Image: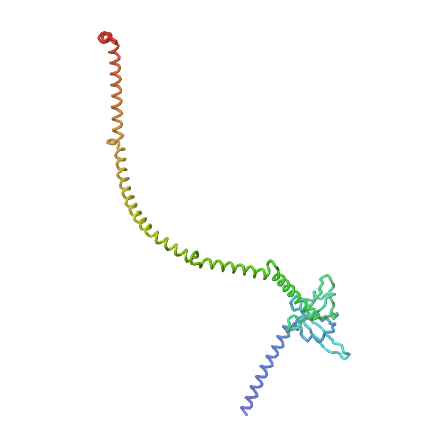
Length: 290
């Protein structure tokens, strides 16, 4: 008995949890679909009710603005269809609008608002909106036409005699032929790359003694440079000694200049004495003119 009561208690608890979870799920779905929003009802007029189902989204430019809220078959044979529009989007429902049954997403169907004109009057609740369905072939044509245009353009470019695939193949053929000729010239044993490499090897062998001689010359030049440096050092010392104010060449030149000045005065005095002597009467008497 206790076990039976325990089982009943567990079943009741489980059923309550399942019921509660179901209510939450229904509430969530209803909230997402906008059933708890403040909404305005409009009637629909269409010959394509078979393509519709309850809860189909109503969109404008990809945004959800409402949903199909009623879809029932009347006893007269007509179909009563209504859409519930969120009041925040009521400004889109103006005279002249239409709803298009769209299957662009393939899996799902949507009602898409079209022909919106902001200058028209806003519709009143329960006004009738026309629903239409584009021809599938026309819709596919609209999607395929741009692709066909691109394919035609590609075919025209490929068949162009100047830049098309034939021209490219001809250019590639010419390039391959030129490359083949170049490879043949390069691989020629007499005038190609092997002959050039052999000649380069011989030239390098000839230049090797020259390089050794140049190395010896550089060593000798280095010794000469050292000797020249030493000579320059000695010359520098000689110049310094020559410029010495007491014992240098400058002092000697000044002494020579002084002696030269004295010699000049002496020679001038001798010239004057000779002139006086030759002009004296006694000299003229003793040394008669020839």
